[in-house]
Image 1: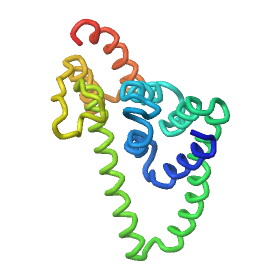
Image 2 (image 1 turned 90 degrees about the vertical axis):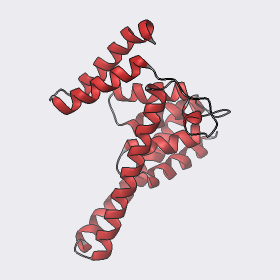
Image 3 (image 1 turned 180 degrees about the vertical axis):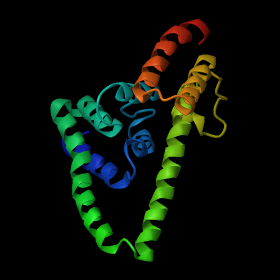
Amino acid sequence: MTVLYLFLTYCKFSLLCFGGGYMLIPLLTETFVGDGKLLTPERFGNLVSISQLTPGPVGINSATYVGFLNGGVAGSLAATLGLVFPTLFLAGLAVSLINANKEKPFLKGILYGARLGAAALVVYAVIIFIGMSVFTAPVADFFRSGAVRPELSVSGLLIALLAFTLTLKTKLKTTFIILLSGALGALLVPLIG
């Protein structure tokens, strides 16, 4: 992968990801994860996990990481800048257009449709995370018909249920829940798988 390819790929991602970094998960998976591609499903899962523990949005962290794997420092800069530049330009343009046309039915329809598309991508990202964490199936095999039936990870299920419950029932900070989940994973996975 060349530095220019990284830049253009992340520009494309930037143009397609409405709603934040988690919208990148399906695009990253399709482009970089799988047999013969840059990342194995396990490495991708680690990337997403580390992105949650380090400062910055998941999109920027993934761009920097994937860029570095492909082109060192130049690759990191190319992928990160590719993700940022289109967003800055389009955000400025969008704000001015939305403010000028916010009452027009056509614009309301566009915004409504974009929210629905973003929601579908979030659901897809959740399914990918479940496949990587709660089940012991690689992401690529999780959706394939005829693939080996994934096995349930008891520790993954317990940690996911605890994190979900803590998110709904407490006012704990997200960072604390992620750190707690990581600590539980370190304890439970060696014991019960």
